[in-house]
Structures are given as structure tokens and as C-alpha cells.
Figure 1: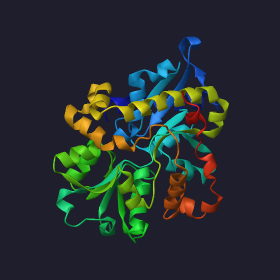
Figure 2: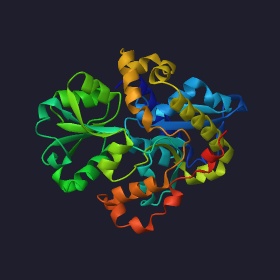
Figure 3: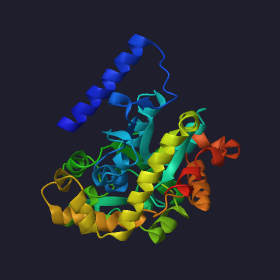
Figure 4: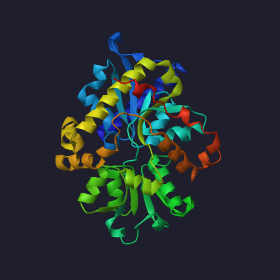
Amino acid sequence: MNPTSRLVVTAVAGLAMVAAATGCRDSRTATAAEGGKAPQVKIMIGGIDKVIYLPPKLTEQLGHFKQEGLDVQLLTEPSGAQAENVLISGDVQGVVGFYDHTIDLQTKGKCIQSVVQFADVPGEVEVVSTAQADKIKSPADFTGKRLGITSPGSSTDFLTQALAVRAGLKTEDITRVKAGAGPTFIAAMDNGGIDAGMTTDPTAAKLTSSGKGKVIIDMRTEEGTRAALGGLYPASSLYMDCAWVQANKPTVQKLANALVKTLKFINEHSAEEIAAKMPAEYAGGDPALYAKSINDTKSIFRPDGLMDEEGAKNVLEVLSSFSPNVQGKKDSIDLSKTYTTEFVKAAK
């Protein structure tokens, strides 16, 4: 575990201990930062160094949160499934992860909504190990293969199952293996722990540039996403508890202002200019490859933070094709509660 991960785990564990010691705390309103100068908001990111989740860290780097008078703490977990658990427990006020979690959680009686929609497409790719490239050319070849996902219940898990079902397979025909992202994913492919897997940049860029992997499904583009999933699939977003949003509208508006400003920056600047604003360690010692990974993914980001309504409907359709949580409740899902455009429409 790297130092950043240890820090996050320790912080979250500490929060849990405080909660246990003090009983049920009231997390319905934003807490004041030190000196009472700014609302404090903790946001958990399902992999802070993934390019698909670049906007919040770039927002911090550009100073947009501070410009809005916010004290935002960005934390990280390896996958969206783990990040959503921290939100539900009340230890953070927001999660940067895939929109599909809001639908899945509604089937479990939770009201969670996207307040800023970063992307209309997943930004994910299915990478096949070079050693397996002649055997796995499409999802129809997934049977009996070890398929890497970040973790069970993550959006990479959802997408892997969806691709299999659309190819005529059953979910029980495939083997999903927890492989994480970044170094753990690459190591799993290196040692044969997985034959193929769902991942994002910069992991994808590292695998393809080294010749270790080959992309067979590319959902970093609208064309590739429509071909793979039958339509748009709104993904990367900032989602929050509905009750918290209603109780903290001024703070949520400031978050939206800052993030929409960043989305416009991404839309108006080159990958090299964006990479230069990010922490140097994100480049992993290869600035050119990091800039390439941003360039390969940056087109997924909307410049306005709005949700595509038809895309949201397609996410529900895709989830209902395989998810036991959604299949029996599809007709009772209220999509209007899974996202709001109120704040991005009012963004400065």
C-alpha cells in the first residue's frame, strides 16, 4: 500500500472511530473550516490518479475551490464501490465516481444524485493481454477467461457484465477478478492473473505503449460507447446524498461553479497544458506518456456539467440487462432523483 493509500485508510478509519465514540452525528450541513472561514467538504474519489476522475484534482490545482470560498479535502479509494460506502456512512459529503451507482443505490433505498456530470461516456477500455490477443477479440470470447475489474460492485464490474450479456453470454459464464487499477492491474496482467480487463488511462496507456496489452473495446469515444452499450453511458460525476444537497444548496452551488469552470478549462486547453497543471507525481516519471493518456481521454468531458437525459435512460437499460438489483425494480426507478441539473445550470 502506498503512503497516500495508507493516509486515506487511516483517515477514514479514524473518522469511523470518532463516529462510534460519539454516536450518530449530524452530517446534514457543511461543517465550518478552521476559523469558520469556509464550508468544509470531504470528497472521496474512486482512484484520484485516473484521468476519468481528473476534474476535482485539477480544480484544486487551479485554485477554483478556494476562489469559491470552499475548503475541499480530496481523498481516494481504489474503486467506486468502496467510495460509495464511505459516502453512505456519512464520513464524506461527496463521491467522484460513476453515475450508475446512483441507480444501483436507489434499489437499496438510498437517494444519491449526481450534481455535476463530468462525462457522457465511461472513458474505460477493455484491454487484452498480448498473450491472449488471438483468443479474445470481443466479449463473445469472454467465456472461461479471467477478466480484471477494480472490485466487485464497481462500475468496471457493471460494465464487464453488461458487455458479456450484450454478447449473448450469461454473467455466470464469465470470471471477474479483482485487479484494482494502476500497478496492481498491470501486475495482474503481467503474471497471468487476468487475461483481459476493464481499465482507464493512464493504466491503459502504459499497457499499450509497452506492448503488454491491446485495446479491443474503446469507450473513450461516443462512437465506441454506442457500439458497446447501445447508447451514451453517463459516467464520471460528483454525486452526493440527496438530503445533504437539499440542506446545503449554497455549498453545492459553489462546488458546481468550481467544477464547471474546470470542465471549460479542459475543453479549451491541450492535454499538455492540462498535464502541466497536475501534480508532477501523477506523471509517474513519464510526462509525455501522461500527456498522451490525458489526450486519449479528455474528449469524454462535457464542458457544461449537464446530464444527458437519454444517456441516463440508457444507463438504467444497461443495468437492467444483468443486475439482479435493478432487473426486478426497473419500472420503479425514478431517474429524476438520481441527478439534478439545478446547480450546473446556475453555475457562473
